[in-house]
Length: 317
Ligand code: SF4
Image (tube, rainbow, N blue to C red; front, side):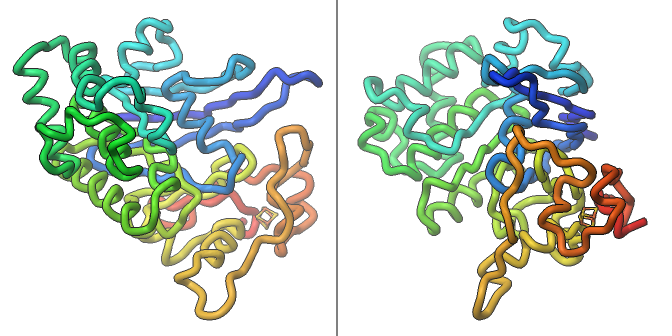
């Protein structure tokens, strides 16, 4: 059963030269104990889609349509106070750069205990026990000593683990991991992804992984949604997606993964459009080698191309 369901989310920005739409009918869902990856190039709308769930949006952003159901409640109907109660305790964010999420003036333990006290309404020994358990879960050794450390005494990987520990200590049902390994080196990336996988399996937590890295998707995700220029263009079980991608954009992304190429990486000609550009029809058509006349005029709907596999491309007609 889906713990989170985003349905037909439409969002735009009030810019100096008028309103510009950035998300078009974005729909996806996540089940408990599953990892759903939202992938695409920078600026495709994956982060703004995720931030819409927590309502952590820039001031000029406007949601103009859609629903976001969390345990059957539409988050878009909630007041600011109600969404603040869900943020951090039920749905937690693991940011790209852990450096900006920890206050350098307080020990990591003080910050973790503060979060536990606020979101779980427990104090003293019980909160301390929770903090130790959370550090153990994210494999921070010598938890009692490490709780007394300041952020500058932690490596980048340790800081990211501490952030994940904060989400765990609050029993978050959903983790939104926004490029959680981008700022880390390769071996630490693997450790963080292993920890997220353990959390998913052991605690039945749903994880929304925002990433531009399709290698991470193949190794970790259960489901994947590919975004291009504010739209989801392909939706599939991750294993099927990696083996039999359908959309020309997905093919191009997969060909750009180093492991799939023995000598030369293939690049995608051109650049994704900005929200200031108007492109009729399929927004990928200026970069697509299969472009047909209809692609320049009409927006392709999602075609069913396999078991739980959908692709927005006229080639499937
Ligand atoms: Fe290419 Fe047309 Fe498919 Fe868009 S709809 S990806 S332009 S073939």
